[in-house]
Length: 292
Length: 284
Image (cartoon, rainbow over all chains, first blue to last red; front, side, top):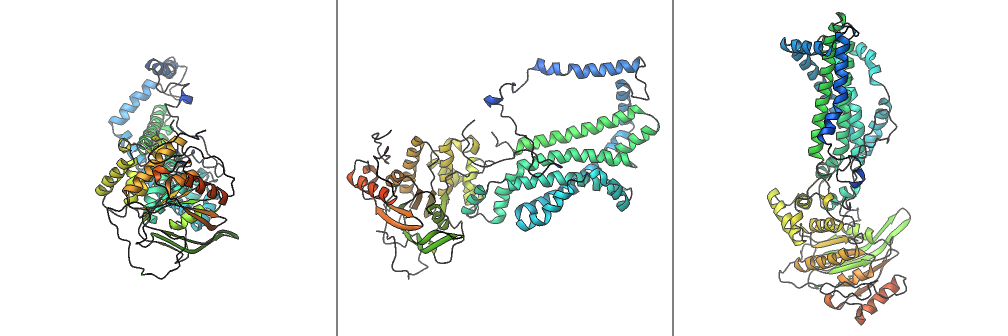
């Protein structure tokens, strides 16, 4: 590594909801050229990659075998082949597509609401002492609440329609984004801000060119966390009660002991989660290219 | 000769110093000072950091401000850079000032060219900003680093970018806050040559804050020593910059005096770095 002469501190790791303030996990990416990290090869050998697929495929094969021989009953867990056939059926008749669309819309709307609130609060708290004094104490207290525990209150306040589901997702999203963005803004190198001031950059210019980009790495860590929580909140909200969406599909299947449909629903949930994580990872790669 | 103290504070305020392109480096008495400090005092709590400082910097003059750590020299530079609020009338800057700090303070998420161009954000259009940034980076010898990320640079390269960022706005006063103290000795010598070169080409005044007597003697027209918040002593360095070897009796004399003012018993000078020639004697 070249001597680092810039004293700018980037993200130090995610700030974890539920952990004491300032607690963070080591999330530093390993530089592939860093000799200290060379115990593990940067890019795995293809044969090695192939080997890593052996045990998952074997497990699925075992599962299929157990189902075919009757050891694993259909009402307990449907066979992989049955699940796959069911997925094709559900996709063909449009059930799966419309249910997925409803769930995605739901999580997107909840995410946008929660992210807006979390980011706005973090920016206000991060940029002014008064804002921090006003916003941070209640946020630090509220973040210790397990937000799923609020479902009964949400139902009393908002009924069982769309509102409590969105509120649950938004609440799950707002906190990790708030905590990480605030930590990011706090971590911005004051000396870099001062240098910008010496160049006669106005306050909005310093915000746009120094403070917000400086907070971005930590904000992206928060984004990744909050997206994970968004999907989790969606699943919980839809399982508690829904008239449409993937959760509804799963609930109906439960009534009829259709384990194949349930597994299809679960698979779609996890694929969606993987997809959003891939999007964030792509964003990180683009936005943090400077971390050579 | 520029004065340490100016007995005539009443002057026409609107006149800006005019620049002649064919000027020779060195202090000029005809123009108004680019920086005037008058009875400037600063205190942090009960700690008096600066006590009634009077200092003029003439256009094109190269001044070194020497002092032990904690003597208030960085505080004075911050006043001149308008980084701290200063009582009205105590510090006056005519024209633009720019700072290069001890650390490069580059924005790691902007490429080298964009880091430099940022200093022009309020003065010109984007295309022009980038062109000027490239021209200035060329001057500091970093043509091949325009698109590099700051984290890819060595310490000396990063400090060159920092210098380019300060220069790109064409300041009439360049403030250097111990800019070379974190560099290795060889890089520091190169940077000294570069700074002198840039100072000769551009017509700006330079104030360098340093605790290195030899650095001050190699670079400056005038050396001022700050002691316990007072600007106590000042020396004009007479010999040409290519004739400032430690063997030069006048340099040796000034050096001894400055060290005395700093409360240090004189020692043999270490490697002297001139702008034109290197003498290796004394390198130990």
